[in-house]
Image 1 (spheres, rainbow, N blue to C red):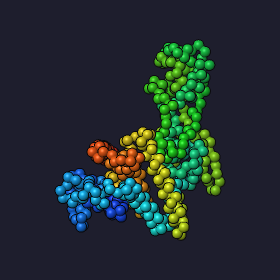
Image 2: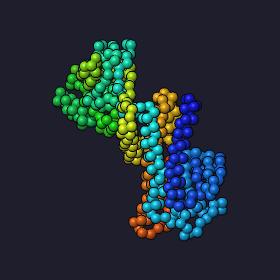
Image 3: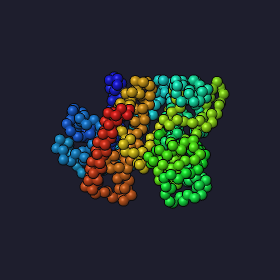
Image 4: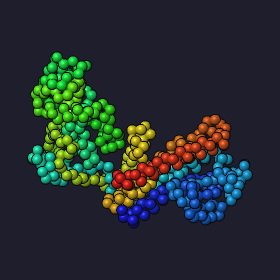
Length: 464
């Protein structure tokens, strides 16, 4: 890890926090609301730095995760804060609901504006933006590997892989996913395929009762070994946005795995253990998923049909990828493609958040500031400052989305209370709002601890 890149990434993330809180500050001052404190970090633990600029107190806390802007009414118990009369026009609560809403939303707005500024800056400096897609090539064949040994001449160095089972391949991860999940003898079988194999077995062995145990020593006739159905998944599954749904597959038992290996290539078999017909059908059904690969070779498209993947989920090919960029060499292309990049990134962030909320992405996959800093540092080191700026923009978009959630203690929660008060046409009980906010603040701290644990565990296990 390069310490310079690490410092750059920490600085970029710190700017995002300051930009967010600055949004709240300038909106509040624009509407004449007095701001008593501008804090960098969470008000937990010791204060590292404290200064005053007129009536505004500026603080830097030891817990650098986050920031805040507070008004005099938020500091009623703080004797160091000048209190305002209840009817003062400088109080946040005395402003019109639409003004309060703008002040609360200003941090999110600033994060969005700053994200777009960073994308435009990157496009203007480097004259290009990534499309989110890559060209995937065969860099070489593994010597004595599976492809070289069992499929000579099928693949060649320089082949570009276009599709697998009609799925457009735009990243190495998609290719690896498709190959790995099409491997031979993965110890899992599809329930529908299992029923087909069971029917075939019973037709060849009419004396077998599928609900009764077939005793050891029974000679059975085996149907011809067949391949499983080709793997067909949604693009979001292949790129890792959606979880691969294997709920329709069943795991083979140890006895079924052993039987699968023993009956391979046989037409008849004498059972060495007691088995139900379903267990034998499971052993018969576990084969491999054939793969159709479309490649581009010397300008010609070639279809490779029914490729078999070995049991380790490898083809024995070495891959390389070339990121696809769009040119941004004039003002119009910079603005247009920056807007497209931001729209695509926001869409992916919202989609990922929905997957997390619905449980399709496990909580163990949630990461925070440590992971972001480490990944960002690596991106700057290995992929350059272009991707470092774009990652910072994406983080800024993420901060905006998260803060807009209608959760008390976040900006979206405050906005929700303002809307409720507007609908009710009378203010909510301040004590109730305060207690709800404190409860959710505690929950957010617990969530931060979980995310921190995930980050540390990922670092220790070298996940990233």
